Image (tube, rainbow, N blue to C red):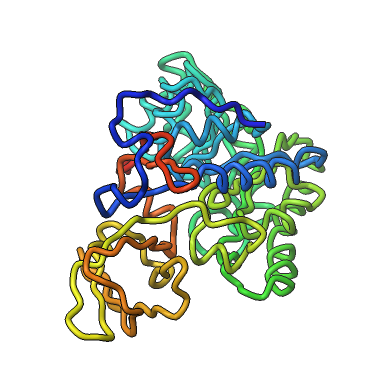
Length: 370
């Protein structure tokens, strides 16, 4: 059970009905989010793989702490700056599931590793050498996961022998420790048919598991294989040889992931208002792509399945056509297609239950890109 932290009485919005809030405002249904957190935690409680939630979903320290309180072994980050914020708030086990490159970043990484256990993905010896030099200079140790490209075509070495060769070069270097592998089946998480997604994602992840076996035969111990997502937690996350699951979106959910994992509830929404009714069938809302992530498609309107949003979204406007008979000033809940890029656009989450504001949580890592 998640312990409820007493709310601050200082914010005048606490206790007010949602309809009284200014718009657009990013909302989190606390009860729905808590049920999502509990459900995912329960899935991994008695499994060999453990949950390492992805901070990039919500970028909110309070939510990260609630995930850790339910048994997560640490947090995953996309950026070094996200990891720095987590460590500043007392979270001492973080994985940066990305390559950290450049003298400034390597020094930051090395210094951060003095304060917490910090792991980072690598796929080239030049990255490793730079991190080794920086860590040796300050006297820290950075844990390295070799990223294996299992089909996404982004970062990563090829499965098999290339990973073995890179690991052999890592183990003799100071300031770094070979900790295992990272592999992400991201090219398959949006396959809508769940059975097809499961089959294809397992086949992709099997390449990482087999690479683990190559390393173990070469007497290069693999501490963990880390990967997976909220759309594959119950498929690749349940495979033998996979140790950590970097699920993120389950904490908030969004329109796209609701299609992929309907067992989780949409807890995130944007409170918006109708600001114009140019015709009887067209309404305009007071948010656009500067407030709602739209790279997975257009958002939807909660409680109004008949409302249709065309492909077009402007910077500050969303057009709904055809629209129900909404009045100007009417408050609606917009469900973004992608929670991760939506949370990154906002500075706080207005937390609510039963139609009232119960807390305000900062999104501390909003806008952190370095």
